Length: 279
Image 1: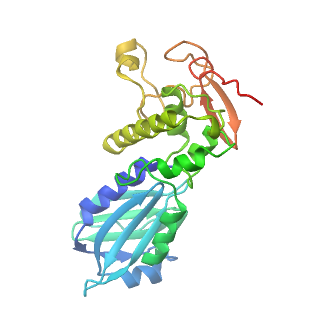
Image 2: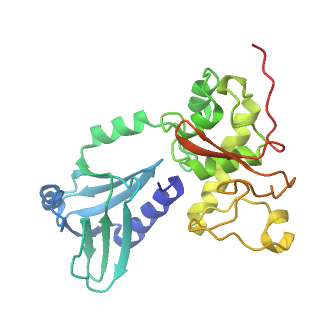
Image 3: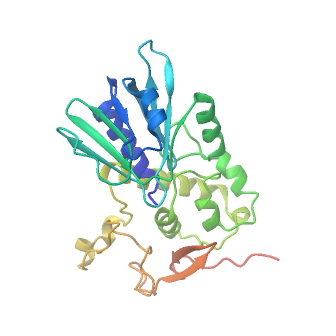
């Protein structure tokens, strides 16, 4: 499933390609067709994201809010942008937006729905702060983390606690901060939480800029270490994600993997030593 940086990149692309223009909205696949008809000819004036949710805002000819398209890509959703005439629709295109010689197609999302401003507000209220939203702060998430007996690994993936973090950023930020993923949230210090937040904000901002997740420090790049670059469809250099059994780039200890709350968890047992907590 795409992590938060992907949705922020898409929001930027929608703003760049269609922002402020009257657009043609359609649903070649069909299920979104009634909503698309209501938005057809409206101006796409806002594109923003919160965690793994994308929102496209439209205004009608009178300047009134016509509604929001709420998109959650899920496991299989993809967006493609193109120039020139839009190609003949093939396959499951849920949403097509066109303007003059530019177009975009959304395929296979978990969610593509037309919602009101009130419904949009409800979605935001259900989500935790997003490190990529500059106005968001780590305080609300800390209140939940500091009272929880759940592991920090679980809490980082809980979108109600922190929005936008997926399995890769979770594994990598905990490694970079030297934190045992099995540590209960209530045993985390505020200084550790602030360091996690700041590191996520930096790493995810880099992901928005570059289009892939790259988490290793300069001294651990392939060039600096004289090692082959990582070969993975996700791209980018990482410390522990999908490196189970391979030597840690820092200490050479084999990286471990386990199923944790139904998700694969990766960590280095030496760089992220277990914490002995009182009973």
